[in-house]
Image (cartoon, rainbow, N blue to C red):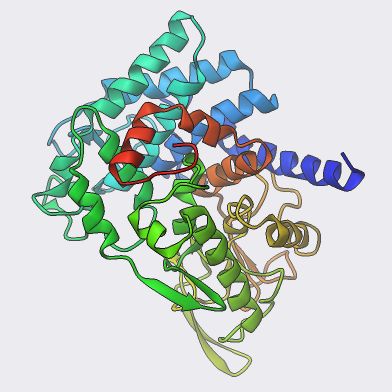
Length: 432
């Protein structure tokens, strides 16, 4: 291994370790719930908790955490979700095998009158399945992990979440029933449909996947032809768990590529958009890109250098149609590492060394920054988010690991439910 490779590898491990510290310190060890963001009295996010479950195996392999401690954390989490109240009551933890998006960190009950979230439940269940595959020792505790992970997955009633329609709804609330929005158009629901189709107890019909892909948009944008989704995370989160290299569904067979290549093209489109910089934001360029769902300096409308600028708070920023207010999310860059290391690694180096976005920070990369917004901060590069988010930290740890060793992909290739779901969705080829 060359010195340069060793240096990159050491830097990647350092970022993984710092990012994992979030799950180490921002988790309730009694129930395994992970706080959504580092703000006072904030609730847990079930998606962040699912990412933590997937990250514990990486932490064991990397020596960030002992196997015994990881087993304890994992068991506490799975026991909590299995035993927590499931029912139509407004203060339950979940219903029909799905869970509320945000839960109280201490009680584990529904927070903020939020929705029962189908996609966030998918991330949670994917994390549980990861644990069930990884913890394979012949001990009572690891046997219980496997049993609980399996039971949690089997409990989810996917056809119920369709509410009589062809596609899956975004969710449900006790107060007003199913949300009007459905999982349509290419997005992170690739994982959701795979899990739903693979269920041995309450599977989605194969027609649901065809109904979803019928809403796809193939576009040409910034020199790339690809299946469009604006925010970068939509091209990444399903790939945390599933290795899409060399396997294709009917849509991708028709285009002659796979979803992995599609994410590579989306990553390049993001970089080229920043280089072209149509809205003339400060700093955008070859090493300054990455628009995704993220925190921001708004809501605010102010004049900057004679131009009236609108700034947003937490929104799904995207390329090329926006919204875009000059806010960059380093985690979205890192999570594209397996797809395009040749442009991601130099950008990461720039964000670490020039913009100093990991400087004196216990959790690694700051969530977001904005060079255009004239915020007064300690960083000469403008506004920097005060918070860290669990939803950002997980993909950093896991996609760096997929780039380095393919650990998550290897584990989930051995998950029969994932393989079954992919086959029922029409995937063929490669490792399938």
